[in-house]
Length: 380
Ligand code: COS
Image (cartoon, rainbow, N blue to C red; front, top):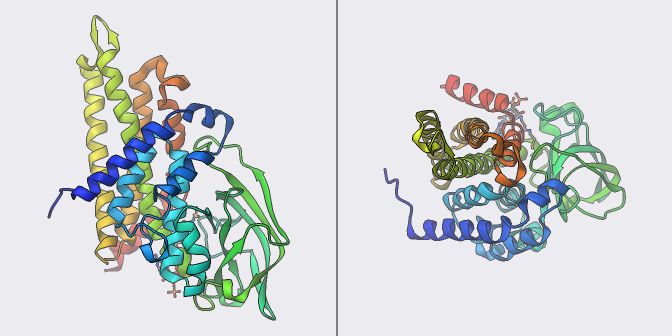
C-alpha cells in the first residue's frame, strides 16, 4: 500500500489550491450574501480543465484519474463550496454519465462541450415526491413517433438556470416500475421547458438551485441514454461516483474550517496567552485533525477503488457518510474556536458551517448511505 501522491497529483492539487485562493476567495462572502452564481470563476475553471477532469482527451477532457479529481475538489471546497458543487455535478454526474453510457453522437454533440467547460450540465432526478425514494418517478416520457413527450417537475436542481444541457430521469413504462425508467439529454430553451424560481438556501448560496417544469417537451429519441429502461440503473451508477465527489467536497469544507480555526488559535489571545496554549482548544484541534485524516483516507480509498476498476458503491457511501458528518462536526467546532468572531461573516467559518449541512443531504442523505452500506455488508 502506497500512501504517497504522485508528482502529477501534487501538481493538480496545488493548481486547484492556487486557483481557489486567487480566484474564488475574493468575493466569496458577497456571493454567499447575494446568492450570486460565480459565473466568471466557473468559466475560468472550465478553461483550466476542472469541469471535465476525468473525461478522455478525445472528448475534450483532462483524462485524469479520480484521485486527481478528489484532490482538486477538496481544495476548491476549502474556499468555495458553491463553486465546487458546480464542479462536482458537471464532472461526476453529467460528464461521467455521458462518457460511460452515452453513444458516439451524444458524446460528440454534448460531452465535448461539457468536458471543455464551454457548457454546463445538470442532473435531474429529484422530484417533489421522489428524493430518497428515487424509483417513484412521476415525471413521464411517453414515446410518440420519433420522439418522447416529457411532462413533470424536478426539484432542487443544481445549475438549474445556468446549465445548457440537462440529464432528466423519467418514467416511460409505469407498469414496469424502475425497469421502465429512462434518462434523457434535454437542452435549455426547448418548447415547454420552464425554469422555476431560484431556491433561497441555508448554504452553498452561490450555487444556482431551481425547480424545473416540463410541459409536453419533445425529446428526440436519439437523446435517450442507453437501452430502453436503463434510466434507473444509469442514475444509481452515476450517483455512486457522484457520492465520491460530494465526500471530497465535505472533506474540503471540514479541512477549510479546521485550517482557519488552527491559524486563529495561534493569534487570538485569552488569559494572557494564545488560545492554542489552552488545552480546551488544543484538544478540539486534535480531534478535528484526526477525523479529517480519517475522512481523507475513506475518500481516497473510494477514489482508488474507482480508478482500479473495483466496485465503489460501498466505499463511496462510507466516504460520503463519514466525510459529511466530519464536515458538520468540524465546522461547528471551528465556529466555537473562533468564539464571537466565528459568528460573523468575515471570518468565513459560519459560511462553511452552513455549507456543510447539504453534504449530509444531497446525492443521497446519510440515511440512504446507511441503507447502501448495510445492504452491502449484510449481503455476503
Ligand atoms: N448500481 C447499479 N444498480 C443499482 C445500484 C447501483 N449502485 N443500486 C441499485 N441498483 C439497482 C438494483 O440492482 C435494482 O435493479 P434490479 O431490479 O434489476 O435488480 C434496482 O436498481 C432497484 O434497486 P433497489 O431494489 O435496491 O431499490 P430501492 O428502491 O430499494 O432503492 C436506494 C435503493 C435507496 C439505494 C436508491 O433508491 C437510492 O440510492 N436512493 C437515493 C437517491 C438519491 O441519491 N437521491 C438524491 C437525488 S440526486 S441530488
